[in-house]
Each structure stands twice: as C-alpha cells, then as structure tokens.
Length: 221
Image 1 (cartoon, rainbow, N blue to C red):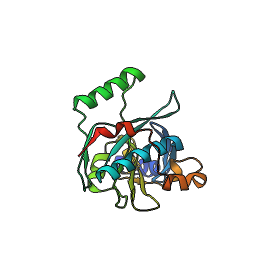
Image 2: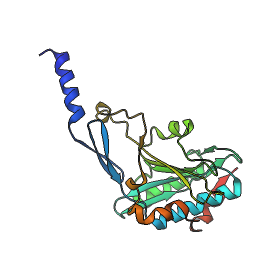
Image 3: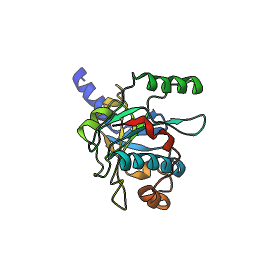
Image 4: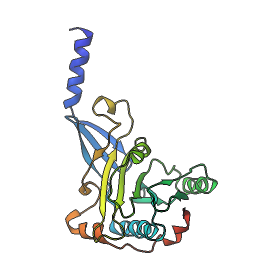
C-alpha cells in the first residue's frame, strides 16, 4: 500500500470513528462528520438577569449590548461578565476594548478571586428590535471563541423574542481532521436549556429582572 493510499484510508477511517473533545462546560464528540453534545444548561434565574439587562439597554439606547459567560466547574454554574463597552445608538454595533484599564481590572479581579482566567467565554449580544442572526461581523468576532453564542432580537416591540443559537468549535489541529472548525454549528435551544418544553415560554417572553441593572452604566453610546 502506498503512503498516499494509506493516508487516504486513515482519513476515511477518521471520518467514521467516534472522537471525544472537551470545551468549557461541554463534552462533545464527532462522528460521521457530525457534532454531538450538550452544554451545561443556563438556569432561569441567570436567563432572567440576562434578558433584564440586554432588554433595558435596547429600550434605553436603542443599541446593541454584549455579555460574556463562562462555565465554572467548581461551583457548577456560569459566571458572567459585563465589560465596559461602546455601542452605537440606532445601529447594530458594539465594541469591547479589552485593553481598557477598566476591563483589565475586571479580568484581573476575576483571575485573583477564582485562580483562573475568565476567557475562553461564550457570548450573548443583541440586535435590539431586529431579527436575530449571526452577521458577518458576529462570525468574525466568534470564530476564535469556542463555545456557545446567542443573538437576541425583537426585544422591544414583539411579544416573543427572536433567538439565534450556534456553537463555535476550538481551532484544534486534531479536530480539523474531522470537521471545518471555521464554520458555525447551528443548534436548537435544547442543547443549552434544561427542560426546554417546560421553560420555553419563559425563555422567549420573560421581561427579565433588574439584577444586573446596576451594570447598565458600563454601556455607552
């Protein structure tokens, strides 16, 4: 068997075998070029805080906002970080400067408290009162951030929020043998929310809480 033929056989075998990988808050596997797995679920208390914050920014500024979330295994829950960010009123754009000394302080304080870096982190951002989708800008921002990413839309005038949920794979050499790590993996909400049927109405319609309203001043237009 020639070396080229052997490599081809090994490549075909790799497509069909079940291979396990780990992400923060998720164990998944690849088989037959398909991704299987579930993330640790977002509980409804956290989700209501998320909606309450992002929806209020949408109402106050008519502008995007972004939050970051990281699974913390020792505590068995997500930690969330609202960075200081610059948004554009009446537009779909939000920027975070991680070199800003205020954001550096947030990261340093987290690291000192939990003895680990906050990143890698998953994201939630809004499209205010427009539909939810992954824009080209979103794709560029997310491609090197493995984990789940959510866009929220229809946050003001509609009775039901629009949500777009996808996963980004880590840029691992081994993983690239099985799938295109540069492409998003579209997921349904059942991969991130426990008891989806029971909680779906809350997920899609809750006005949220004021738990994070003291952080609203971190978003400037």
